[in-house]
Length: 110
Image 1: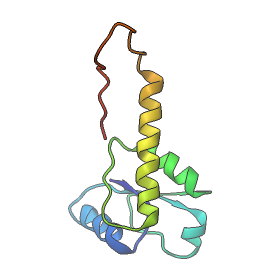
Image 2: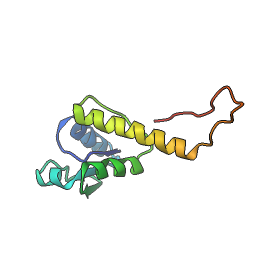
Image 3: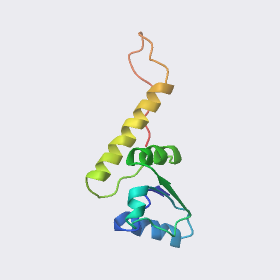
């Protein structure tokens, strides 16, 4: 599992459950949050980055899919950023539909 690297809230609980079940958990947390002592220090791997933007880019690069659990504005921000990144990377690698095509074969995945 890849997540924001915190030791509090719902995602901290999920991270602990994954670790307890023998899974691997990678956290990606900005230095400022790590300095505020909210970083989960018991993860398989904890990556400390310089900014929230860098955090989202790194999580996007590490992940195969995305799930949003109940949260606040930060959760919405990250969810929409992932959707936007996925859409822009998919359109950059997908061929343009032909002008004679009436349907698109483009498929979205999470």
